[in-house]
Image (tube, rainbow, N blue to C red):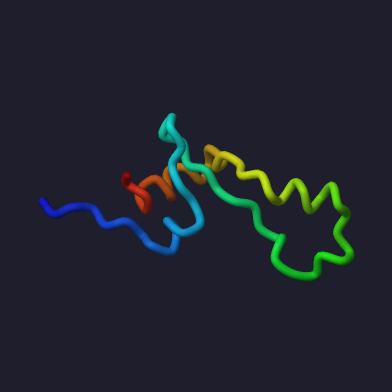
Length: 64
């Protein structure tokens, strides 16, 4: 059986943490930042764990 290939588009946006959960980065932080508050922009810096309903779909795209 051949190796599973990692989807490179997803691998650039998400990764697995030490516990094996998928961590994603937040969107909306690249442009039109003048109307967004400082508090909101700081929140975009933190990463977050992928929601449980999306986990099955993305776990096959990031096998390792």
